[in-house]
Length: 344
Image (cartoon, rainbow, N blue to C red; front, side):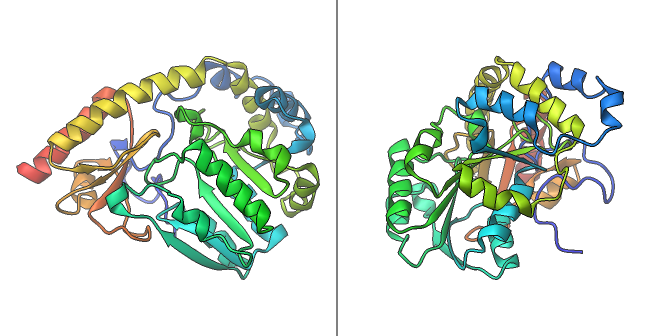
């Protein structure tokens, strides 16, 4: 078995009291999604629509783009694997730290990863220096927007400059916007028309709390998506996932409601963690990167609270943890446990 380097693996032993190691919407699924889960058992006995027609139609309306610019998959991880299988980039640029699946998928298909180190002194922000690291030898760039595990957004003008730089160097640019709906950030979608090698990843996993249903979306040039699509399995998106995706998009209030909740709770917990003696790095997302004086992950696990250990992210060590924002009572439970571990 390959090592599992992410949060949320609750299946190998006692379940946590609260799992802060994942960054799924603390408000849970929209009611429409929960209702759609068992809506049509007869349809679930048939093969899924391999073209995801109803879902792509709903997504086209949601994003105001053409259906031909949309490819659906079995979560964003499936689509990442397809991108690397189809395009097989040899020289890939990543900021560091960032989501580890990019490097894993690149290396599986024989590519080499160059990491551009982000500065802790800058709060791990991606700056103009990243643009200059893109050269004509760079086959592909991954940008996690907002970045994971830091939660930092890039300014829209920096994303646009990066897209232009990649176009000028004939480089594929993959912008991962799976956490963008939690933020007030600007999507790279308007850049698609002038950048044929730009790909944008979205997922229902986080914002709609559909991690177990597995539903991801890739947006890009129609001809490029046609190259990538065959590298996924037939019927990779289940009938249930397609139906629930359509139901999720029908709830237009879910994203602004979630953003408001996250904005308030993130600000409250940033102040509380800082007062507790932790370093809290700026975040625009639904999670916080923290640095403690001592490693906290294992002591907190004894309290039944799981956080994401960050020592397998480049540039971070076991004093860093990532905490997914939960509901206030659960967040307070974490805060009290950290205070107890640190101060007795």
